Image (cartoon, rainbow, N blue to C red; front, side, top):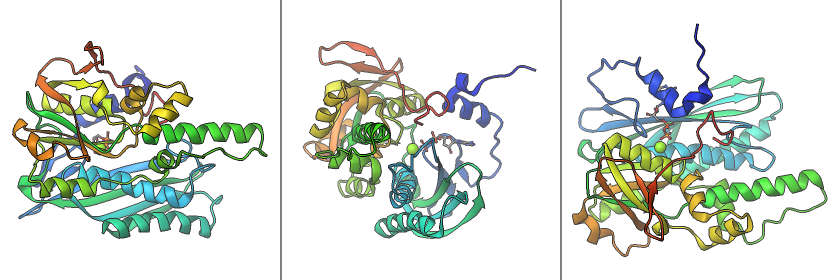
Length: 344
Ligand code: ADP
Ligand code: MG
């Protein structure tokens, strides 16, 4: 029998393959695989369901990630997918796989991070599962949210000439990871050297204690702007734009110099000889929201420091990255593809 390597498919190729065999039979399943969360008819509103798993050694390294931060981030990553549907998070369940390397106190630390996120975002923890593991720690969280039927925003609603907008700034979480990895390498070579984390507060916080953009969902509502499509930026801007374009069957022009990048990310990228735009395009874990709006909504968002217009959608064709010099090149995603890159 033929053997296909997962590395040749990549994460998204694998999901495409698996989803071919999935049939939907329940009329209440309004959206299955293919968006940030599934959408389920609940009568006068819809329920939103999403799940994410983090695996030790693949998604996190406990030599520099405090357990409390890990718990917080695991919750945030799920909340973010509900906000990306323009929903409100209400409940989570938490699954843990633990080895005997961990003490009660350690797991209480982890849990305190999950509970802190729940408290801040107004979410109830309603269940889970706990099993043993031979190979380190795994934490998988499922989040359940709700939205008014007519307010759900999918990945597939973008249209020609609409404007592409992103919240906050990008690339910081990726730079934070570079700094933590660098200091780990230094520590390994000489444990007497203290980590040099001075001046990197913002980017370290973006990596270790990210937030989900509940505030932006609320702000869009207040400004009376309903995006036509939306996705959260968990794998890097380029990858997310490609998802929006593919789902919506449109192309786009992304203007590289418009991408919002914090000055501290510029400086840190310089230290590492990295191009900050590349970090923003291909780094991950920013948990910002990327969305499209009708041109008529431009005035409602313009000048607001929370939002940056970074491009516009076009009819079909490959998504393009337009450089400072005005040159258009095909937008590609190096991303964090699970089977190609160990950082995913
Ligand atoms: P996100 O980055 O927003 O969390 P993913 O890229 O992880 O989204 O997943 C994309 C879509 O594929 C989602 O709809 C998700 O539910 C679905 N998916 C991922 N893995 C599986 C799987 N093993 N079985 C079924 N659906 C999956
Ligand atoms: Mg997502």
